[in-house]
Length: 129
Image: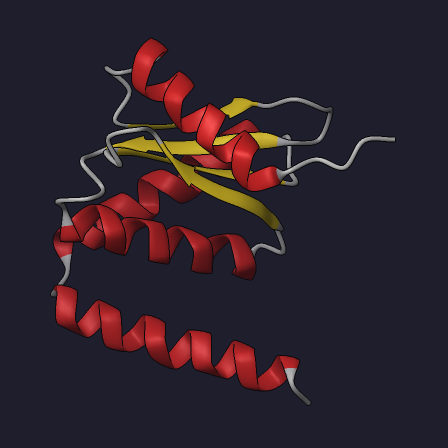
């Protein structure tokens, strides 16, 4: 059985979204094996603090929903991002990414960054116990 490089798969998913789904600001699509999906954003990740915050909030939402992130990647321009997750609930994934984006654009970025840092620190500390 071959070992899958999930970050490489996420990079492929980001390139796919950039090339074939450029009109979709965010989305979720089936990816590879049953039970895996790619969640993506075509939102100028490299240049957009809002896009970066969206990904942080999405990761937190996935963690809160007990959905495992297997890999992360970008297209060649670092504008489109993708996460490969262990879930085939596309409706739930689309809701999570949309909610993260809406929260990112409606909130104070500095406050969201502080909140994410506190939550990620708590998760890290719980994992070391």
